[in-house]
Structures are given as C-alpha cells and as structure tokens.
Image (cartoon, rainbow, N blue to C red):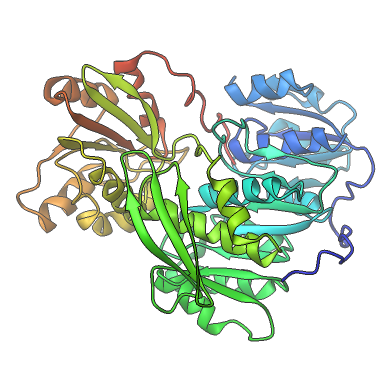
Length: 484
C-alpha cells in the first residue's frame, strides 16, 4: 500500500508556485474544467477573476463565491493579475491574452495551472476514454468517508454534493479527473493512477490510435505509486501487462484474470448489487445507486485504489451506499404521462451500448433512445463504430451533430450514424430528426406510458426532457460558453 508518511510534493521548476496568495485571472472561466480549477484556487486562498463569452450557471456560482467574473472580453479585466491562464477554447489573439503579453505576463494553459494545484498535494489521477467522472467522484467519496480529507477536481456536478471541486486543507491527497483529450493527463505529475479503458477518441489531436495508446502508456509509466487498471478492457489490460513489476498494479473487472474480480451481480431499475473477490476472500455484497455493469466497474476501480491507499474493502463499500451519482450520468430527470425520462452524457460507442444495456435491465415497456452525435471530428472518425451501439433501443432517434465549437465538415451529419445502424441492423427502428424541435415533435407522437425516454449525448440534447417535464435547472449551462 502507498506510504502515507511521504512528504507532500512542492512545485517543480517551471510551474506556478501556489504556496503563497496570488491574483489569478482566467480567460474562459465558465467551462467545466476551468470553473472547477477556479473554485479550488479560491478555496486555497487565491484571489480569482475571469471572463467568459456568455453568462452561465458556472459564472453565477463563481461570482457568489467571491470571484470577480465578467461576460465578454476586455483587457481591463486583468486588473492586477499576477497569473493569467486560459481554457483550451481561447484563441491566441483574444484581447485579454494580448494584454497579458503586453504586460510581460506568461499565459498559462489549463494543464499547467492544474499541474500547479496538483503539485501542492499527492495526486491520484483517474483517466480513461469514459468512466472518469463517476470513478473520480466515487473515489473522492470513499476517501472522505475514510477520514482522509481528499481535495478533488472532477468534471461534473456530484448529486448531493454540488460542484465537483473541493479543497480540503486537512488532507494530503488530491483526486483529479485526468483529461486525455489534449494530453493534459501527462502533465499532472500523478503519484497514483486509474485507467478505466482505452478506446479510439480525440484522434484529431493524437493523429492515430497508436499515438493515443502510447500516451496512456506514458501516463501509467509516470506513476510511482499504485496503478489500477481494468482487466475487462483490452486497452487497459494491455497496459497492465506491460507495466513495470516493481510498482503496485491492481487489475479489476469480471474477467477471471482480474486481481479484484466482480461477482454476484444484480441490477435494478435504479441500483446495482455486487461482491468482489480479492486474494481468495469475498467481500460484499455492496449496493450502488446507479444501474448497470459500467457503474459497478467504476465503483470497483474506486474501491481498488482506495484499498491500495489503506482503506479496507468493507469501509469503502459502506461509503458507496451514500453515492448518489453525477449529473448527466444515467440521471433520472422525472416522469410525464407514464414516461420516465433519463439523461446520460454517453457519446462514444461503448458507453452508449453500456448505458442502453443498463436501461434494458430496468423493466420498462420500451426504451426510446435519442442520440446527439458530438463534434464533427469525432463523428467523422467514429461513425462506423456506432453500428452495433444501439441494439438495446427499441426506437432510436438521431439528431444532427453538436459542434462543440468546431466548424462543420461536408457530409458529416447525424445521417452517418443512422446509416451505420441501418447497415448493421436493417430491421432497426431508427429515425433521423435533425433538430431538437424535430426530436421533441417525434417523441410527443410516439412515446407511450411505460416507456423509458433516454437522451444520450454531451451537447444541448440534455435540455430535451425539459420540454416534457418543465425547466429542471440541473443541466442548465452544463459546459459554459468556452468550455475547457
């Protein structure tokens, strides 16, 4: 197990020193990643200001906590900033970035600012193509329940807790959801790491799948503490097979080769039961208020890392009983005219298939899925892989692509997903509904009492249930205007 007596790290050369109070200005502060960083910086005692292109729930929340935030961009808003940082969405010619350069201030990237925060704590980084948010939030909950006072930066709101960003001055561990999309996860200096899975994504950044897998290999190899890897995923399992034997490595999953094996699975409409076997001993059953194998795997990843840090299995399992999930992860939004509405962030083939598998176990008469492809680059790269992703849906509606700030690409629309599904399953009931208005009209026509309406995607499709349920607020301004 990890030695808790090791001294806390200090900021390495070339990293912002956050050991003294700083005035920090963040351009693009409203996005999920940067607003979480801003929250932690304020809790650390730093004075934070920032700007974003549009008003949002995140901006209002930061302002209520004392941040000096602005809508739009203006050079004067830097004020007396000593440190200036930008989200990944901010261009080099932004007027505030130009002003920082005129003053001779270095403009720090999100990864560099996050590294500076991590340098003040022993860091556990949770990475993977999907499952990061749930796993990170469960791990933070378990460590907190065990009295370890973790700080954490997680890319989603935790139900019953609030924003996924907390600074606890009494703890030595920091749990971070490690973003692989732009290579950020390689710059965190993490002592301990979790990899939930490695699948093709963000190939516009990496160039090809080989480069992506090499980046994950570097991420794992850099860690000198415990490494927890999924035995059920071929990408993560290959990393486990290649890791150095002089460091602690734990694999988990339903696979017979897993060090921590999942057994005695049982699923309900809104929960799961499972046990784990480790070194011949059976622990559990444990209860989780999220349905499906994908969430059980994430829970066991969190339990395994907590165990490596000294938290007994039974204590970790008891903590999971208090887990209420993360916003937009199989989030039950409500019922209307006998129809249950659930919203999920899933936007990649495997996570879509896993979410639909969980939905099938809920006992609804039909599962009516609405899918919004996310990003033109992602859709162009992955659309053929969606052919088998929707077999759990009785009816599938597919909208056009949510751009997430990307420029359209010729021929890249939701029709690609429809064509992939129809080619793989000619009898599938799949319908192209380009706009959210089209989707709402079609749902109003076809939904019946006893149905589950499952919205899937990382964009503004999350607002679709509100058209039937009324304003919910939980998904308001999910990413902010300039997310990153």
